[in-house]
Amino acid sequence: MILRVNNRRVWGPGFWGFCFLWLTAFIPAAVAQETVLVDRIVAIVDEEAILQSDVDREVELYQLEKEYAGQTISETPTEVRREMLERLMESKLIIAAAKQEDMSVDEEAIEASVQQKIDQFIEHFGSLDALQTELKRNGMTLGDYKTRMSSQMRDQQYLRLVVGKFIRPKVEVLDNEVRDYYLDHLAEMPVEPDSLTIANILVPVQPSLTVRQEIQVNVEKVQAELAAGVSFEHLARKYSAGPNASRGGAVGVVGPGDLFDSSLDRAVFSLLVGQVSDPVISSRGVHLLLVNSVQPNGKRALSQIFFPIEITEADMKLAEDQIKAARQRIISGENFARVAAEVSADPVSAGKGGLLGTFSLKDLSTQFQEALQDAEVGVVTEPLLTPAGWYIFQVLGKTEGHKYTFEELKDNLRQAVESEKIEVALAEYVEGLKKRFFIDEKI
Image 1: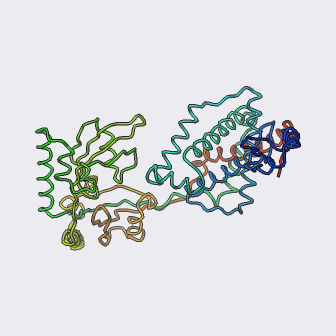
Image 2 (image 1 turned 180 degrees about the vertical axis):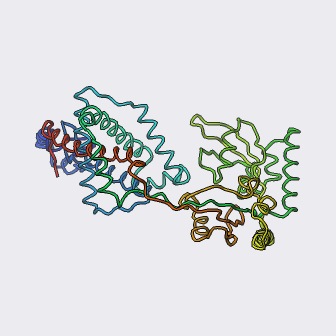
Image 3 (image 1 turned 180 degrees about the horizontal axis):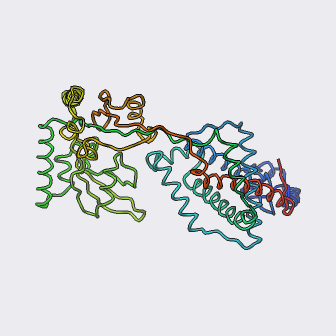
């Protein structure tokens, strides 16, 4: 146990326990009543203590990683805690073995890996604030997470060093073992899915000509007044329809991925300080962006002038009528490619007669999958409304999938067999370390 006496840290029974017992024998009763348990030792490996708080942090990190991956935890809390303790003990053993061989890790690479992981979480949760909220819900601060992840990455580097020196050189994979693995796991071998060659026509839902002309006029006014020396802040108050107009368009400080639209993100992080962007069109409207300053961490103080794009029911109906008319022309006998060249607003496929290419269904969006999964070759699908507008598709060809052959998979299979052998050899190696190094488990 780790106890605190009069706000001083004291080690409990175990390797350091005698000192504590000797000290408490002379503590007056009034002082002893102030003793408060704040942590405890759950195991000692090669004179390195594993604390209850270490296990707690591992559990919290495990829960966060599972949630990030969209997985549920099937083990009981007791089983999870036991698994985390065993992981920590094995890591301590491997580190002890590595240090005996004077192995060292790359701290800069560890720091970069931790930052990359944080960036992935920020992208997943939508912003740094959202990530911090999620961490708090799991009992952690961002600093706690960085410390725990750094420790995990360090453990992984030591593990790779130990495997590379003591395990992998002794592992041999024979050709017949790879083929046997394929045959034993034949039912689990991946299957190349059916692929579709598809063409499409896109009719976007656009604001009326009047709305577009009004936005264009306002953008040109702002650009002209900026060129004449009028401040961006004044023009934001005068023209912007954004919620930050009264603050001179000030949005605040943003980092990569903080903005709701990737086109805005790209524009903001391509601007120099004091530079105003060209008009940027998002799903909500037209933006003129100004970078006021850049912080040492790369985040930017941003202002904007915003003109919303208002889509009416009449705009939606007009686009729907246009896609239905295009579909009817094809059903009546006109060539799909000709209609696509005339009607489609898809910048990728319109110039190729609507041809998108060949894809497996799983590579398409969920909406596209639903529209195409039962479509027959040559048939034109019903109109499909998406955020980009109205689509119709035609399946030009289908290719049946097949189970991958041994020859197609043998390199990956060899790696799988090697990994299994390394896992077994590593478990045996760790068992040997348990005999070489001192271990005292307290629970």
